[in-house]
Length: 306
Ligand code: NAP
Ligand code: GLV
Image 1: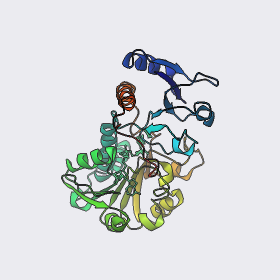
Image 2: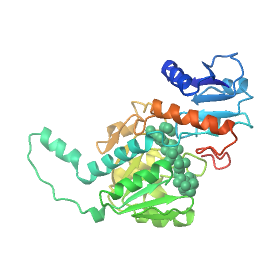
Image 3: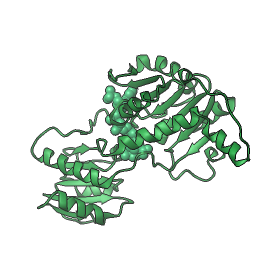
Image 4: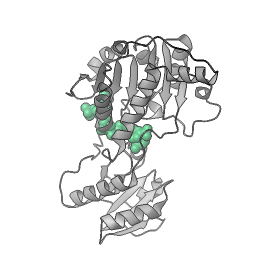
């Protein structure tokens, strides 16, 4: 088996060493223009030239959960595209989102500002029942996040394409129940894949439906959010703040208005990082399954685009 590695922005040596250990007998090399034809590819943000040259690929293994950027390229039509299935990301997402919700709910930023100003001050505790959290996307990451939030006894809602049952989570499904889901939520967490159906999903029309004092946590993709609409809703006071990990343009340009909002917390696309060792083990298993003609979890449905 020949594997080609083409992950932009990733130091290849430790990946090659790990993949060679996990797949003894496989020939594994970093791709370069003109490289030999491979059976499988391990990719992150490859150039179009990569697929133009490697048109025979059987498997394309993305070292991330989101495949939106990959699906913008012309891919070999026969290739199976496989994305990461947790691989250590769901626990990170759960800790990031719970941190964001709790930090907002407990007014920890305001306490920190007071302490820095030398003030010993108390704030009236908020009612947990007044902080219903809605999670958009109940897949590998969203389901874990929703479940974890229930441990802190927030009312938790979830919304997905197909109906789900998750203990302690009020689940909504499909376009028909989207409005009801939003109206029942005060904090909105986005864990949807970026597809033609979900692009710009957080815009004036939808964010206005959140309960007053709403809070937005975007950990999926920047293009889910219409930036100007978030800013307008913060200015009007309908929304209280946001914690954003992903942006339309990354790194977030220095002139972007988000930098100036005290009530927007920014992190640099770091809420759930790819964990190399777990990813290598998972990809090796998936490659073996694909070669054996077995079902591969995390296979991307090209029609749904996730
Ligand atoms: P996933 O397992 O594919 O789950 C996607 C969920 O979204 C599913 O529940 C799906 O519904 C739902 N969904 C898709 N389209 C929908 C629509 N039009 N309406 C309603 N629900 C819809 O994906 P995942 O592994 O949880 O990852 C989610 C996203 O997180 C990734 O695509 C990526 O963009 C992002 N991410 C970000 C980071 C970061 O560091 N910021 C890290 C990893 C991932 P069904 O279950 O009914 O199909
Ligand atoms: C990161 O954003 C991922 O999709 O894994």
